[in-house]
Image (cartoon, rainbow, N blue to C red; front, side):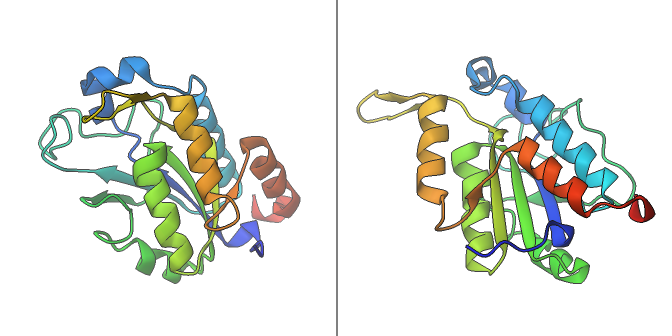
Length: 196
C-alpha cells in the first residue's frame, strides 16, 4: 500500500460523543488509553496545521438524538474555530455528510481514523475511504469499543478480541494499522518551524 505524505492528511475524530456515556456499555469499554491517545493526535495535527474533522452520529437510540443533552463531543475534546463538526446518520462518515467534498477541497489524500466504535463506524468509514481512493491509517489505540453479545447464542465478543479482529481484516487491504507514536514522529519530520 503506497503511503501518501502525511502533510496531505486529515485527522478524522469519529463519534467521540457523550451519547455513549448515556449507556451501560461505557462501563465495560475496552481501551483505557483512548482519551489520551485521541487527544495526542488532535494536538499533533493542530501543531502541524493540518485538518482535524469531528463527526457525531445521530439515530433514534437514547442519547444519540440531536436533541439529547448527551449529543456533544466528550469533555476532553474542544473543537476550535474552523474545525468542522459533521453530523452523520450512517455507519460511515461519508455517505450522509459532505466529508468527501471537504477533503477534496483541502487536497487531502490520506485520512487517519480515530473514534468510537472500532468495528462499526470507524471500520466502516475506513473501508469506504479506501474504496474512494484515500490512503488510510487506522489507529486502533485511538479507538474504543465495548463487548458485543450475539442475540441468538448469547456468546460475547470482548473489546480486545474486537480490536484484534478489526486490525486483522483491515490490514493491507483497507488501511495501515498505525500507532500514535509513529504518526506523531512522522508529523514531526514534515513539520518545520516556518509552518508551525
